[in-house]
Image (tube, rainbow, N blue to C red; front, side):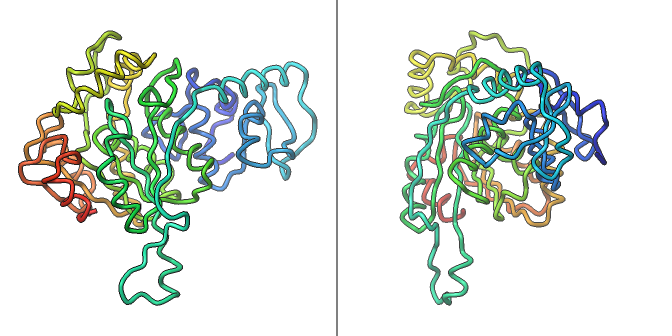
Length: 356
């Protein structure tokens, strides 16, 4: 396959947290098997590892998968379909499918009209039919999607179809025992969008959620309608940071009392929260994103907006300015005096809602 070395096919059936391969159309990042599948699909290559057949069965019609290799790879009908898998390949496939399927359940909520249509003043019927307003809100590293309680209902009332969900290891979503990096969070979002049958959406990422947003947009710009928004988002240039598993999340928690309390409740009551939190700090999703931002900047269909509080003590204003440097065409909106908790502060979140 053009752009992919033959030896890399051997790694396409590996488990989510193990061996990695490099895709040559994205020379700047390493990717797991599932990330590779998504990238192949983005480039028009219809491919699915045989091992993930069971996992994808609820999301797509995979009854016509044929073929196989010693590593369990298979193709949809239209490939060679020259033989059926061996017993060993079938056994590997079942193990892979089980591993993929049980990576963790995601809890989500949908608000607003199902058609997601915003009626604008003086719009013609033809114009209205093309105004599809679906938006995903991605929370930060410590506080789950309840952080959007002041903005999600507002957008829903104004005609947006709004998706909010808890990232793995936060809120009501499960905390799989794996590495919490770009791949895990982009896979979670991609499968969630597939599950609710959204072909495209706008995305707004808060704090660390901005890292998820940038990684997802760089990999799958075809799934973004037009706009991505970075709210008080971090852009950490260090590739690794030494963090112990028993780190206190309040060390970098959002500054308001409510958000500190939410972090404390999760740490004390949610199995896996502290481990997920520490792994997120160590491996992503807000680390080594310079190239993702540059990919976004080179994608003409994407429009970016960067909103940052000038008084942010958790993610300083300079972080937002660095993102702006990577994406020169992005709209830059500093919120005078706002801290990191800008979307839960009444004096700021109304301005933010209007800006977005």
